[in-house]
Every structure is written in C-alpha cells, then in structure tokens.
View 1 (cartoon, rainbow, N blue to C red):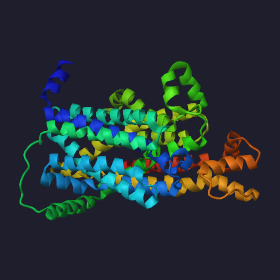
View 2: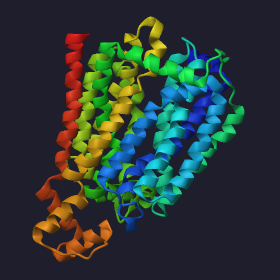
View 3: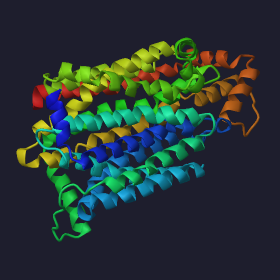
View 4: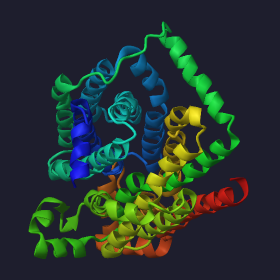
Length: 474
C-alpha cells in the first residue's frame, strides 16, 4: 500500500486532470452511444427516427470507424499546434454536435451530424492518451494507464445510467445531458497544463500529415503485423455488436419482465427508473457489461497476467464469442444477462493483451509508431460491425422486416403511412393475436436468433486465425 501511495504522489496535476477529462468524455459519449442504435431504429411514435437497420449500420459503422481512423491525422495536428488548443476545439465540436444532432431527422442530416460528432471525438482521443503517456514514466506507467482505463469504464457505466433516467421523457434530453456533461471539460481545461515541451520542427501541417501517411506505409510493410491487425479486426467486429445489435435485439425480441420483477423485489429504484411497461430498458441490460468489467477486471487481469499474449487472446476471443452469440439466442432475459457476463470475461481477457502484444512485437525503435497504428483493427471492426448490424441483421432478424414479410404472405392489407409500432399493432389485430403472441409467432417462424451463428462464426474465425498465426507465422 505504501508503494502505491508513493507512486500516486509522483503523478503531476496534469495527469489527474487528464483522467478527469477522460471520465467526463466517456460519460458523455456512452451516455448517448449506448442508446443510439434504438434511437435510430425505434418507431417514430415512440421517440425514435425509424431508420432501417441498414441505415443504422451505415451511420454507426462508417461514422464510428472514421472516428478511429482520424486520430492519425488529429494527433499530428495536436503535436503541431498544442494539446490544449486542440482540446478546446474538440469540446466545442463535441458540445455543438450533441446540441444539433437531435434537430436532424433525415438519414443524410443525421449521418453528417454524427460524422461531425466523430470529428470531435477524433480530436480528443490522441491528446488525452498522449497526455497520460507524457505524465508517466517507466515506474508509474502501469498504474497510470490502469487508472486511465478505470476512468474509461466508470464513464462507460455511469453515462447510460444517467441518460436512461430521461429517455422516457425525450430522446432530446439524452443529447442535451451529454452536451452539458462534455461542456464540464471546459472548466477542467483551466487546470490543464501542456505536458512537456513541443518540439518546433519548422514543418508545415501538410508536411506533418504527409509524414503520418509515410509512417503508415512503413507499418504496412511489416507483413506479420498487418496480418495480426486484420485478425484482431474480427474480434472488434464481434465486440461492437454489444452497441450496434444487442440493444435492438433485446428491444425487439426479449421479454425482460422477469428481470423487472426481480428488481421490483430487491432493488425497486432500478425497476422504477430503468423500465417501461414492466420491461427493463435494453440499454440497462447491455450496460451490465461495463459493470462486470468494473467489478472483475482486476481479478481477471491477475489470473492472466503471466499467460502468453497470443494464447490469452485466443481464449478471450472464444469466450467473448460464445457470450455474444448466446446473448442473441433466446427470449429469456436471465439467460441474456448470463451471456453478457460470459462475454465480459472474454473481453477482459483479450482486450488488454492486444495492446500488450503490439508493444512486444514492435521493433525497439518503432514502439510508439506501432502503438499509434493499433487503431486499424478498431477502425475495420466498426466498418464490418456496421454491415453485420445493418443489412445482415435487417434480413435475418429485424422484427419489422419479418412482420412485413408475414403480412405479405398472408395477403393482409394495412393502412399506409403507419409508424412501425402502429403497423405492428394493426397487424396483430388483423391476425387476431396479442402483441406478445405475434412476437412469439414471428420468433418461431422466422428464427431471428439465427444471427447468433453469424456473430459466433466471426469470433471463432478470428480465434482460429490467431491460433494459426501463432502456430505457423510467429
């Protein structure tokens, strides 16, 4: 304990300011992002935009993918003009994006505003990570980045817990809350001090960005590293279904009354504030992943700390694939919660080892360069995840798409210009079924849970390829 206390004293003020900024930024981001998929696809009379799953997949996949690609450029901008200036710009973009995004209701308008929001996040990401790196040394780096990732998970958990309290009032409130929270960082910037001294090279911004892309070329010449990054993209494709697909699947297919009654008996605050119509909010359920990480990450990390990185990643990929696949298997919410727990174990096992392995295989004189381009699998994973949660989910599992198919098969005629929710109610009445009975019939007839095969095969494929990589390439 004394050693830890001594280490804590070695962190400068800017380190703690940067971690506080990270906590608030993740709070604001996940406060809206965990709810974003259902906001895009939910029926208009229930407060959503009623976009198709394909449109949702394009917005979330491409937009979030670009968010993880841009830091190679925004990082160069920050190095050129200073971290503090870039943070001011990032939070200005962030705040205005959160304010303006709910004002747009067309696919094009929302897509453009989400790209604008992604720009704010892309300006922020490399700066705060570099600040933590520059305010730690060989002795304090391990604990320093441990604190940093703890802040990430605390923000990821508490963000949705706050915004979900206001979801039933209005989705606009979700975005306003995120705007207000991110704006708190303007106050913290008064206490932020530029870490280290910027080296003035005399390069123009164009030359700095050009050097960035030249470095990409150097990294891509490392065949083994590129293969590794492409394999890991499979893991991130599967992982991102937690945000892209699972909330929508629970909203459309899973009966969460059992969990509602459990909380009504033991934690009435949750059943009173995170439910609608005796159904627990799907985003609350998916947010249990962040809760499990907060509680169990240290335990899991202590178990696998001496395991070899590649073998640990293979294990983590398999476990998380099983968990994510099982979460899409049944309509039983208790089974879903158990599956999310299994997924979180795999995530806690694999994710930290990815960064560790990249640090190990990087040439000694190129470690910073290689770590900087570890974004590539995250970028690709978001793009591919958008495809799975978009056209693939819409074809195999989207409730409205399957209902339209069933209505056409029966030769039924429904009024035009109905919202998705109204269409469902009219169809149930025409078929002389209750809404619950119609849901169960669609489930039994069209097997929307079969999407779990796709998710599992992606994760398992990544694990198999990584095993082959370790066996024959490394």
